[in-house]
Image 1 (cartoon, rainbow, N blue to C red):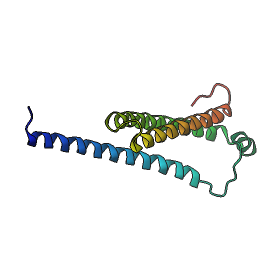
Image 2: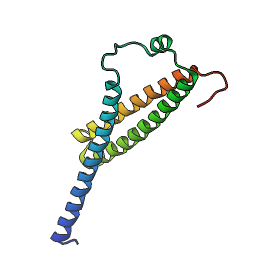
Image 3: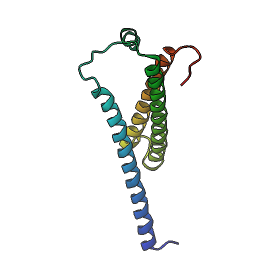
Image 4: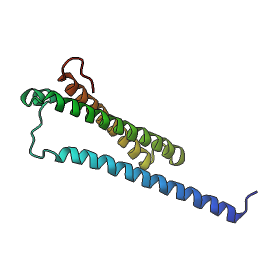
Length: 138
């Protein structure tokens, strides 16, 4: 049997691990929020328009289209990685705190938002990829 001191040490370790996971969640959430805000702040006076109308009005060179397709694919990859980590974190919170806990819910919502942002970045990459001459791949 474990002594009282050993139980206290084990409890302290569990609390420390949960605090670390909170820091990871906070860091991941802040990174995601900063990425979203940076994207939104790029053109604060822009009106909501469809992606296809923007591309037809402001056609880009094939080099720029290739660079943008590449950048959006990279962004989508990063967002998928963040979403996967947030899902693992949510699973951990669910095991430790329960499915109805606030942290579990926040992690799941952040993961879903990251998945949606990754899908949007993939869509933008496909849109710019379509502007490339045939046979040119990025």
